[in-house]
Amino acid sequence: MAEESTYNIGGIQYTKDDIRKLDEVSLRGALHERTHHGIEVPVYPLVLNWKNEAVPGFGITAQVLYDIWKEKGYPDDEDILWVKRYLDYAAQIREGVRPEIPELDEFPVPFTEEELKVVHKLIWGRRTSRGGWAKKEVGDDLIEKILEAGRAAPVGCNLDEVRFVILKTEEEKKLIRSDVPVDNGVIIVICYDTRPSHIVRQDLPDRVPHNRGFDCAAAGDHMGLMAQALGLTSVWLSDSPGNGKKFKEAWGLPDELEVAMHLGIGWPAAGSIKSARVPLDYMIIRK
Ligand SMILES: Cc1cc2nc3c(=O)[nH]c(=O)nc-3n(C[C@H](O)[C@H](O)[C@H](O)COP(=O)(O)O)c2cc1C
Image (cartoon, rainbow, N blue to C red; front, side, top):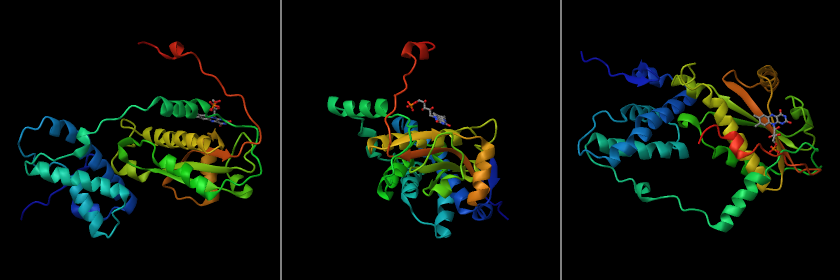
């Protein structure tokens, strides 16, 4: 009897049946990571230095993960459509066909002077607000724009493990500790789901467990910038892990979720002095 094929996920060999037993979040995480490290990272040098020969097995684990994703009836969301593009290129490479990737001919266009002024205004204009927030609702449409900005932030290994909890009422906001008043504003708690990095073993101490916190911080920064652009102000509210645990319990969040940080956002009731930075030369250790 032929030996059953196995697929390497995070250094562990899985049969198709093993993969079928994964929960949706882990399966999605493995699919993202296998697409990222198995296709997205190696495909550019491979295509740009095309040797005119088939690469057997290229991207096959991602393909098997996707087939099981579909078998289970999970949807082709935006992220999965991104996966599918790479699967298509990988299938061509396995056949010895150089895939046509239109983006290879696209280069970033430098911003105009006017556009650069807006970028400068945003990144140097963003400031932390601690003077309280005016009694004016932060509408759902604005919260949505802010969350979308967080969604656009970079993520390690394409694992997409960042999650948000939005606290609106004063009662809800009391559930998480903050060293500045958050009356009238909203709090966005930035969490990460531990399952995507766990299934691909990126959470091991000698891998990149810190990426999950970095991903949350990147999302937080994007959201703070968007809040500023909308005329709101924000404050990062980091907290000790112990308090995050209490919040999880109070909010009934599952064990798989970890709280990284939270962001207070509202309409400023008062202006604030923008803090300054050390000189650039002081920051550069060597150039
Ligand atoms: C990782 C991190 C954690 C922070 N935690 C807090 C906090 O717990 N409470 C607070 O009032 N501000 C917090 N802040 C906001 C900083 O104090 C603020 O960014 C800094 O004073 C610079 O001011 P600016 O944001 O106006 O440029 C935090 C910022 C970062 C990046």
